[in-house]
Amino acid sequence: MRLTCPFCGSRGLEEFTYRGDASVRRPAADASEQAWVDYVYLRDNPCGRHQELWYHGAGCRSWLVVTRDTRTHEIFDVRNARDVAVAERQTEAGKGENS
Ligand SMILES: [Zn+2]
Image (cartoon, rainbow, N blue to C red):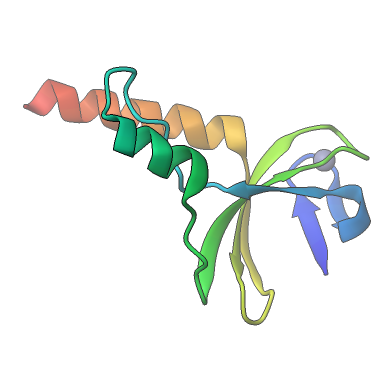
C-alpha cells in the first residue's frame, strides 16, 4: 500500500505510522465520566470507508487524515490534519452564528 502525502507525493507505507481513528472527537471538559470513558477506550471497528490518522514520520512529519476502505485498502483521500481541523472549527463557528 502507498499513501500520497500532500507535501511529499506518493510514498511507501513504511514511512507512515497509523495513529488511530480520525473521527473521534474530544468531549467538553465538563462532559460526563461515561463520555470520557467512551472517548479514551471505545473505538468502532468499521468495515468499509473509514477516516484514519497517519503520521509521516520518515518524511515531512505531517499528521494526515486518510480516508481508506478497510476491506480493499483503497485510498479515497489524504489531507493535512491541520487543514481538516481548521475547516471543522470554521464549520462549528458557522453553526454558532446561525443559532
Ligand atoms: Zn509527507
